[in-house]
Image 1 (cartoon, rainbow, N blue to C red):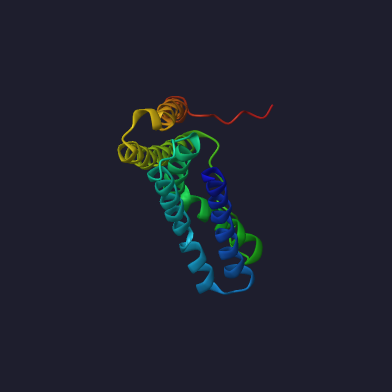
Image 2 (tube, rainbow, N blue to C red):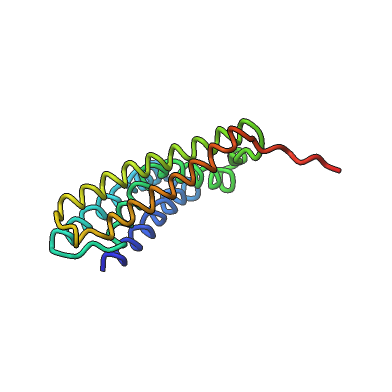
Length: 180
């Protein structure tokens, strides 16, 4: 049940974003478009409430419960960036806006972009970890929260790998290949 709700929330997030952009750029209803875009955090709130209700009702924590925390952390840390990405493309395509920002591919700019991406990942991890710890404390039973601990450990390893990759560009920036 909780897995389906998480999937519904992810779909709902993008439906709100798309509806907001369509209202804003195609129907020229800017206030409604902004209202829909700013409403996306309500989806995160609904997800937190549903997850807490499920766990407080005696459910054994599963990967789906931990995925809810990961989703919320990522949504908060990257949400503005994702909406800005979509907004730039919609404005360019439907409102004659400037060409969308392209991620730098080489040099110091690329290294800075990758470090900034890792800092967003760190923020998502901190938020998601706080939610996972909160769920663990709320349930108060190690046997029922094993999946939450496993997700936290896996995410920490992934964050470490992302750190190594992202900061490697600072030590050894990508160079443009010469045309031969």
